[in-house]
Image (cartoon, rainbow, N blue to C red; front, side, top):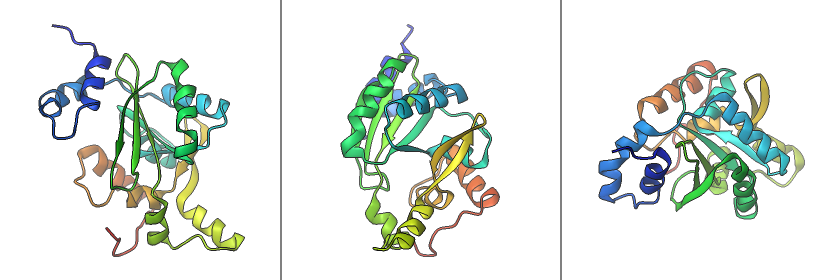
Length: 210
């Protein structure tokens, strides 16, 4: 029986983490999930910029943007929304004409505490994420009151990369590496960590807080 990739992906994404649906159908979903290509990434960037939604790339595509080339295949695109509470709906509306629909939302005690999952009918996925500013301030030092201290803090968090020859906003290599700590790394994640450390010289505090 043919199962539409988008429908299956939405079913799995909307199921609780402990649900048997995730255990049994998750691997099938992963195999059917669409590929996020360079042109797909730039279409998302164009849509968000057209609506003036402040954002930056994270995750696998964020790492590839930092190294300036696509180093592996990607089945999703992670996008950090600078002001998640204020701009989430605007971001969702901006991506709707591209065929992306909101299918699930999560709250986690992680580096990116709030996450909204958008998918289209082919199974392509965009994750809209918030930032945990308290963790960032704890790991890299508070932004401080004066402008120089604020700019130094922002330099730790934000930078630019390149996707398809185009400059795009990204999380910094240090922050990306920090966000790859304290969970079990899959093969793609280990690949990203190697790029962050070996090619970009990323580092995190010696004893990162949990």
